[in-house]
Structures are given as C-alpha cells and as structure tokens.
Image (cartoon, rainbow, N blue to C red):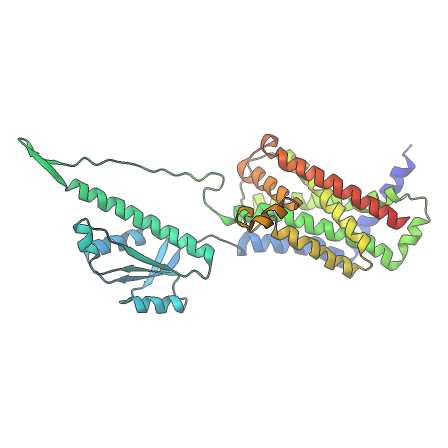
Length: 387
C-alpha cells in the first residue's frame, strides 16, 4: 500500500503540472524564453568575423606593395572595395563606416624592402566594436608578418657572404616553421561557445520564475489557506511545489541539448550521464532561490520582478558572455558566489572539452554546497511563513 505522504505529494505534483500547462502565462514562460534564447544566441549573436571590408591606400605603387595586396586578397579574410589615394580619403571611409579598416602603404616602401631597411605598413581599424577590431587587427598582422618573413628569406638568399673556387657562397637560411592547432573549437565558431551556456540560462530562468510564481499564486488567490487546513504537511507541500519544476527543468535541459546537437551542430565530447547529474545539482540552487523569492513576494508581478532582479547579476557574473578573467578584481571575487558560473564551466567542459569528474569535481562540489545551503535556508524560511 502506498505511503499516504507519497500519495499527497503525488497529487500536488499532478495538480501543479496540470495548472502550469493550463494557465496561458505559464505556457508562455515555458516555451517562449527557450526558443528566443536559442534563436538569438544560436544564429544572431555571433562574434565571428569571416570577411571584413577594408580600404587599400597604396602610395608607393611598387612590386612589393602589390605583393602585399595579393597576400591580403589571397587570404579570403578581406574584401577591398575601395582604393583611396590619400590617408585623408581612407579616414573619410572609416568615419562613414563604409569600411572596417584601412591599410596604408607609405611612399618608399618597396625601396626600403629592396635595401633591407626597416619599414612599416600602417593598419587603421575601426575600434568602435572592440571584438571585431581585435580580430581584424590580428588577421592583418598575421598577413604582414608572413610577408615580412618571406621578404627576409628572399634577402638572405641573395646575400653574398664570400667566394670560393667553385663560385659565390650565400648565407644559409635558417627555417622555423610554426604550426598552431586550436583545441576544443577548431573552427572558432561563437555558436559553440554560446549555445551550451544557453542551457544554464534557460534552466535558471524557467525554474526560478515558475517555482516562485506557482507558490505566490496560491497566496494571491487564497488557496494556500485551504491547503494548510488539509492533512498536507509543510514539507510535503514544499516538495509537491518544487518537484514538478525540477522535472520541467530536466526536460528543458534535454530539449536544449538536443537542439544544440541536431540544429546547431555543437560538438559534444563528454558524458550525458555526467551532464544530467550536474543539471540535478544545479536545479537545487535554482529551485531553492525560487522558493526564497516566493517567501518575500506577495503577488505574481512581484515574484516576476524579483526573479529578474536575482537572475540579472547571476547572468552578468557567470562568464556566459564576458570572460570572468577580464572582469575587475572585485567582480572576479563576486563570481565565486554565483552558482551559474560553475554550471557554465561544467557545461562547456562537457560539451567542448569532453572532460570528466576528475577535472570538474571542484565545480560540482561548489554546486552541491550552494544547492544544499540555498535549498535548506529557503525551505526553513518557507516553513516559518506557513507556520
């Protein structure tokens, strides 16, 4: 025979799920935020810079300057729709945002190369978008460095160091080949960076908001008092109110993971079981925070606003969009109090790096500590409110 307590909890869970899917506002919260976040961060929010429009200002018109132009065109990283004759014209193109950068070849460039003298190529980049500017500058510097190495080799080949009976002797050419490999995200697709992080944001937002609003709704419409005069105990009511949203959180995590793999083609190198365990640890923190919000809110509108008040700092300090190492020192210390930060590290580690418990255990322990602490404190406050 089923334990009466389990039966009561089961009935509350069934009631809560039915009420969630029946109410239009809850249905919107379930489906609209996940879809919007996936579309925005999967397609629209991209930090990739495949090709850039630049202006080519050649004030030397030498074979050497044309060789540099050929290197830029051959890289397939740049489109060169404009060829201004002066630096002022190049600046005007940058000011009007017709190009993202400009390359200036100064007079005497070819002569300096032929005589082995130091010379320079000036690269101007629109820095209003710092991320794009740094990528364009990096592309340009790599091309210029490649041309400089080629020119140096040509000079050494033609450098006569002496003569023998067999003919002239030229300087030997030391060769140094640099081979670079990019791990975990070889195509440098920002989609692979963003989409796994969307999993953390969706689970947090949905479970925070639904848990808080479901409990506050009972207070607002006056059914909480009716529940309290039934044989239901406070702990049973708390479990019945939170477990449905734990199930919804797991379902949302599964759907986002499936979309990441099938729709956005994000690589997955880790363990699905490990990811599921970490999602469960993460849910303890979000459900506990939602439970806490329900104890300080009187209406559903208050619960929604308070949820965003909690969620926004979690989002900004999580490292989802801004690397934590680039934040000010004070902000970096604050990130250690953010459970979302640890879960995003876990998700990206599982998806892109394929690491396991031996690497991720510090983040898992932190999530467990945060989850148990937040859930116990929120449950204690919830019971006091009921009493």
